[in-house]
Each structure stands twice: as C-alpha cells, then as structure tokens.
Image (cartoon, rainbow, N blue to C red):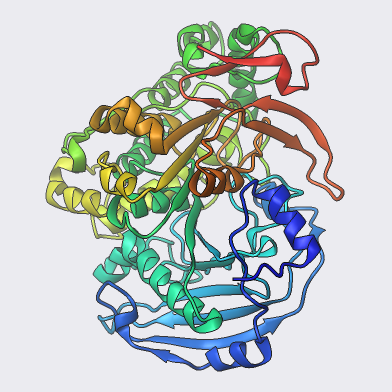
Length: 558
C-alpha cells in the first residue's frame, strides 16, 4: 500500500513509536464509510465464541480536538484530555445468549489515516463503564500523542455490564454469562467485532494487533495471552490484578485487620511512611524520597519499633495497629488450592505507605485504611481494598449479598472458590502458544502498589521462567519494576513509552533496553522534572554519581 501519511503523522509515528511505520491505507471516505456502518447488524458468527448478534448503534464522524488538562482527576493521566484527530466513532453492542444477561457494549475509533495497527484498551476495577479508548495508554508520557493520533484503530468495552447507581459494582456477578464476559469472553468478542469493523471500514483487517491494560486491564491482557494466544501480536500489562482470587481474599483479611483498634489515622500512616524512608531510602546511595530496593527494605524496616511505650498517640502505633501492618505485609495462605496450584497470595510493602493521595488514589489512605475503619456493609469511604474485596467475597464466592463477612471461610465455599479461580485468575504460566505465534509481552509492576501486590506479578513471571526456561522467556517476555510508584502512577518517576517499545520489539525485533522512567508535570505544557532508569527484574536502580535528577547517574544492579 502507498504511504500517504500527512507529514505531522509521519513524524509522530517515527518519534512516538520508535518503530517502522506499517503501510498506511488511503484516507477513509468518512462521509460514506462511516455512515454505512451506522445501524449495521452483524451475525453472531463474527465472534469466535458463542454470542448473540452484533449491532452497530451509531457511527459518526468526530472533529479533531485540542489537548486540555483538568484541575482534578482520579489519576495523574486522567487529568489530561489529549489532542485527537478527526475519526469515525463506532458505538455498538453484542447481544447475550441468556436474555437475562446484559449487553456487551463497545466503542471502536477509526482514524482518517490508518497505520495498519490496532490497540485494544483494558478496563479497571470491576469495569461496568464503557472504555472509549481515546486516552493515554498505561504509563505513557503525558506529552506523547495517544494511539489514535498516531494512526492506530483503538477500541474498548464495558466488559458486558453497566454499573448502576445504588448497587455495589460486583452485583453483575450473580449472572453466569455476565461473570464469564467479565472474566474473559467480552474482550475476545469485542476484539473479533473490531477486526470485522476494520475490514468493513478500510477494506482489510489490521496487520498488527496490540492490547494494553492496567490493573484489571492488566489482568485482561495476561488473560488474552493465556486463553487466546493467537489474537494479539503484543501485550502490555501494567500492575495486573493477576492472582485475582487471592487478592480479593487478601482484601477481606487486610480489612478485618483494621477492625478492633487496628485502623490508623492519616498522621499514623505518615509516621509509618517516614519510618520506612528513614530505614530504606538511602540504601541505594541517594536519599531522594524513593525506596529503590523494596525487597531489601523488607529486611531493614521493623514496624515493631514504632509501637507505643506509653499512651497511644499520633507519634506511635498501638499493638493492634502494629499487628495490622504485619498482617498487610504477610502472605495470605489459602485453605483451598486455586487454579494452577496456587495457595498463597504475597504480602504488600514496604514503601509508598504515605504516598500523597492523588484524588484519593494513593498509598494506604486510598487502598487500605480509607477515611474510616472498615464497616459492615462495606462503604466507598472505606479503603478500596476492603470495598472491592469484601464485595467480591459476597457476590462472586458466597453469591449472597447478605453473607456474614466476619464468619466467612474459603473452605466452606471451596467448590465455588475453585470455580471462580478458574475463571478469573490469570496465572497460567504456560505461554508457549503465545510465544510460538511470535507474541511479545511486557509487564510493569509499580513497587509502591497497595491496590494489589506487585509480588504477585513477580511470582507469575518467575513461574513462566520455571515453566518455559529462562532463555525462552527472555525471547518474548520482560518484567520491569518501578520503585516508589503507586498503583495509578504517582509517587515517583512513572512514565515510559511502553507501546513504542512493544511495537519496536514486535515489528523490528528490537528487544527493549535502556528504558527510562519520566517524572513529568501534570500541566500544559508538560515539563520534565527528573528521570530514572527502568530496570528489568530483579535489578534495581542504584545511584553512582552526577546529577540526581538524571537516569544516567544511576545503574541497574542487584
């Protein structure tokens, strides 16, 4: 095909993806092709999985828009409304087989100038909100054009249910088909529909397909590699909630630990965070507010040193509070064997305990302690881990919204726990089929993450190495760890062009190396504040000499 990219898009592709651009198609005749998609009915057979028919509800041409930044937002990246080109926005739904199950809603964005690639965006939390696939990909630099502006077709889904006001976000799990769609089926179905829409809009399907996701979306990416290894050429999975069943049960355990005197006020959370920095910050050769070696910090930090000798106060922790911290850091031993033989969910911390809450999404105060001690029934004002985990126990495992959480035992629901584990846990280490088809996988764990344990992802990576061998794993998979960064990308340098690294690897055979994390201002224009090397596990950055704000002053070492 002729390359007829406009000059700005050609420059963007070269600069932003670092990969040789695939051949471009001619401009979409949007006044005709876009209109022709609207109202289109597609047979269920366009999806490889059993499904109802597909309907394109609307297909409309959207004008180009400029970048903007909001004063507030749930995450640093979410504050940005990135610049977008003109594109055809396709909205539609996949009908269920069970008439009681909800529709699977999707959005597909077709750019005027297509580079032959597509990117599927993963979701977050329990989903239930349509992912429009117009935002930055996980961890992307704030000043980098989004994939749609780079010429990618982008698409996302609500995973097969919509959240409803006044209902817990886990309610949908009471329907078997909705649960299966959330677990894996909806992402596969929407992928297949998107390919069909591309064929109808451009006259051909995509040459390369990518999946990017963070948190729940990271789990979805790993699910695609494990369940549908032929569907994607490259997958980027950031902070995946990979060991899902273990995580939900840990959320229950860790929330219960905060009851009966274990809860900590913000001043005490700050106390713990400062104590961790005092014990571990300078271990990498530089006191800069970042614990570069959180694994080593586990040996250096002892929360018992903070226990009150006299009356309780903001400058010490009571015995129940010390026990709660120890519980959070300890592995959870399951009394039911989960899929792939797992029985243990790793503990969390230390580092990042007092990460300033970015609109209530940072550190302990967002994910663990919340604004108040865990309540029954769980409330959004509690820590997110308790609100999510306790709700999952009731709706996924107990299948009883009135289940008494204080008496719940996994062994009493062993059959259901095993069933949900087989659906939800993306822990299968046999990625041989994904590797054989030439797929490439990059994982990124943020080491100050309290929404999930980064050590779960590390454990999964090690299980792949054990299953396939170190050299085979290195040929198609990378795990990177970002010190001091929380679940949503705050607390330390966190931004890196992983989509560019992934396309370089898939399309040019250039494996990722010398990646750098950027610390950028959440503003327009975006300012670069400092950089750090992004090290491949198990290496960590250690300061050598020179400007402390430059990655070149550090070295990835054991």
